[in-house]
Length: 324
Image (tube, one colour):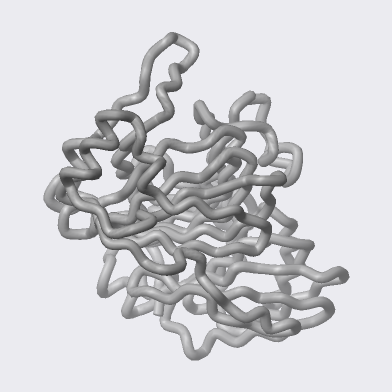
């Protein structure tokens, strides 16, 4: 029986660029100094999240997938992915800027790493004044120009740089070069993959004086040199309801923005549904179970859970994530 609201114990990751905001803003429990990522729902090998409460406490995400199959994932999702849970859900604190990087697509990742590719999206939750992200090229580029700028450590000259504020959304398909700037906290939805091709890491060293590995050769077959006019995703906020922000073969993400009570029906979905609270606080009610999800927390509904009641005493926002 899996018709339950599921909560998982986050896995907190120290990063050279991490900080303390996941602890300060979201109350994540850690004594570590540089928390860069909170893996909320993960099936990455060695980093499988565990149910944190209820009758399934102690079960891993992998356990649930194998035991409950279509009831948990949905029939079409299970047919496509089997026992491999397809999404990795994170909160990220970029206290310092991340490396300039990109990710391989499914075909290349399968060939090189026997894994999924890494299409992802960002929802900016908090940004310090003048915070920026780097995404895509300003103009179409090519391998010769790209490699010359990598060699000269002037790659930033080719990249599109945007100022960001809370509520901004970016879709990052595989092959698109990108980096999160310092002072940004975001929610990230991505394929289940930890494959990152690091192009440039700002010549920084770790506490032992070592530089992180770069993967310039690996990027040659993976990179997309095409530029587009606007990298920021536009969307409409439907106050008191649900609006679609991003939809691709790997995931769909909607924004749920409301105050008061909202009845949600998932009868049209053949998929699990994940909710990330990005503002406020929401109480979920299903049958006799209640769970309160605060900003920076995540909850999951198995595919068999269809009708859920949501309650918010103050204006709140959720990211609703599933697979069409």
